[in-house]
Length: 254
Image 1 (cartoon, helix red, strand yellow):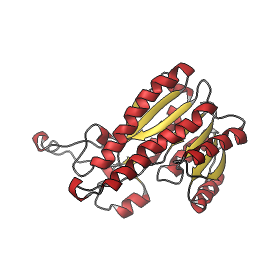
Image 2 (cartoon, one colour; image 1 turned 30 degrees about the horizontal axis):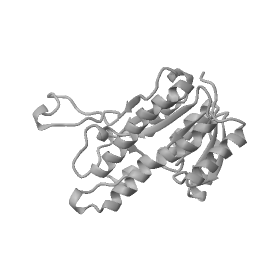
Image 3 (cartoon, helix red, strand yellow; image 1 turned 135 degrees about the vertical axis):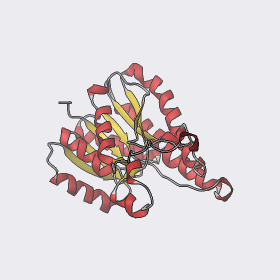
Image 4 (cartoon, helix red, strand yellow; image 1 turned 90 degrees about the horizontal axis):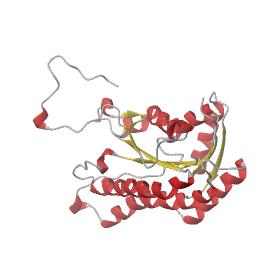
């Protein structure tokens, strides 16, 4: 059993929040959940109280994409728990659109949400971390194989991953681990409602991503510095050259 940790979870009210928080609570972690929506934070904390796990959950309304908000959140986590062992950075955004119909402000917004928010939050957390500290971020396969009309999103995530790998070299000599999870579209009730045309077999279950978070925040990942762990389910890039599946093969629903 991995040792319990004290972690700051930024952007906890996002789609990965519930599954991630549950996985960490079940391990026994002490979590400070941050977000900008007080009602959603309170609801998430209420759900966590009903889960079967020894962990503790506290909440703080804060915009960790701003230096003052991030520094306040990191200091609060360290003060409330007596120490801080790491951060799970769930803040992010998504947008799609062809280049000629996309205003430059959309690029700026996604760079802020997906890249600069991580920089700001990490600068706030690092002074509180000691050897064994864990930092977890979220990338996408589109950073390596971008698709049409996703240039803004793919570029912002590519910036995040490149920065993370560079930063990991800076902090590894302090025994701090910075790693990322590369994931595709997460299957949630909200996703299915908003995108009914998407084949669920090509999405990834939020619980599987949460398990990866639990691994990357445990001592089991102590050999990993600047790694990108793919958790993409059965998603794959297709090509007409590859043809379809072999005769008689059907795709499983999950």
